[in-house]
Length: 281
Ligand code: SAM
Image (tube, rainbow, N blue to C red; front, top):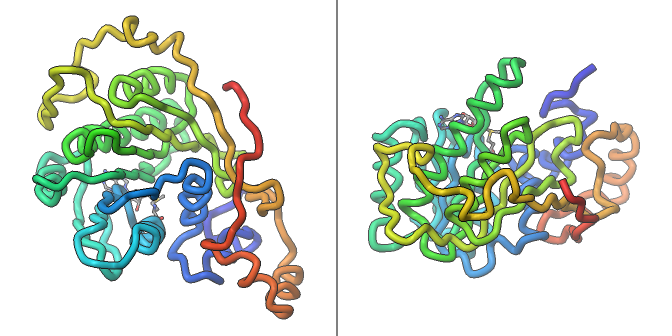
């Protein structure tokens, strides 16, 4: 039987409950940060497709203090309030939402833009991958308006057939693009995360919300070419971290909890998470 994100056998679901995260997804961002030090020096961040808000929780805790305006969180759905997090309810593919986000960063750009957006999955892989790519491009378009030079963009990506084109587009704007799979993301899922560091748009690039990024006639061949640009694939998460594809018996979790080992060992800020291996894709 397939798993849902609320499956009680799912160890990351239980740990999220245990540690007060709103969703198991919190561990994905924490594991990505362990690998890429995403939060280093970050003062302002945007969390796109943020509900129910576990990434916003992580961001507001990690980027120091919880003063208002450091994190702007956006989602189609309403989200329970979080201290220091400005919330916008809206569709990131809509011009009005993008404008509302951008106005928070005028004159004071963001260091980090994250997007964990996922469309309602239809089961038709091509359709799902296309919808996911549209979300990513909408997020990238917003990022081009709010990110400071050298800033970082992290977005969920479906590793489908045409993912190379997306990598090529991301590479136009960032000096480094990697594909990362945190240990808390199930192997059975085609989800991974594009980690794009060093925001560096092409000379003369003027961000324009009304013009889809796909329309730009960049010469991809001059920029390594999407067909030839091999994005490194990195898995992150300590070898001893729980495997998100395994079922751990509840009694084991109960025993650890009873002995005070569970919360102690697994508080996210104390997690020891490192690189497991690097594989060419
Ligand atoms: N990162 C979140 C967390 O840690 O709590 C979980 C995000 S959840 C996997 C995906 C979210 O994407 C959903 O809340 C959904 O409403 C949002 N979403 C999907 N399409 C969107 C869109 N066009 N605009 C804004 N949010 C969108």
